[in-house]
Image (cartoon, rainbow over the protein chains, first blue to last red):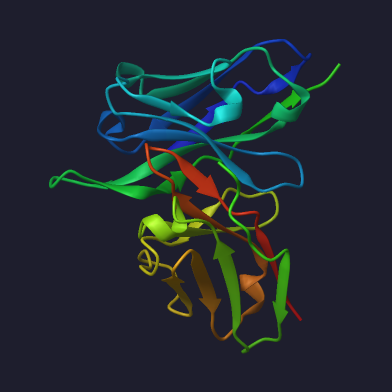
Length: 125
Length: 110
């Protein structure tokens, strides 16, 4: 079964740091672009960052540039999000998501086809 | 990276059709045929319903359909069913490997 499981969320004070993890299973993780998407309480979805298969390219939404770092370890089938200088407005459920692709023809699509259940980050004093 | 604009809510009776609009700009919705739609039930992860404007993944009921005209994409739910009650989000590729989501629409089945 294709699955993504996030972990690492919790309560942190403003200015603090947190590292989120996403464990992938049921597919060849190293073949796919991966993303983080968040959802503040009672609000909509917000794309945060994504990373190329080999980790050589990373892209971020403007408000997290310089504070968040997306990374991956293909040997461990894991995706990470290092969050520093956290702000109250970063409070959200963070989802790990897979960018759709078709193999063996190696076409990468512009949507996310597999999502985890999310991990909750609360930034509060 | 401004969110795409969706109506806050739409409603309909069982069997009726509802349409959700998703308005962006020429830098996102209007610039690419890469609009996707996600359904989200309370406390659950998003589920892909439509991709590439109008394509349905296998397993998604055929009473869901998508379209686009200019800078506005639309999701139509025909033959509304009780289980369709959920929040719906559009998402568009916005160039340079970035994405933008819509503000979200709550669909209520009366």
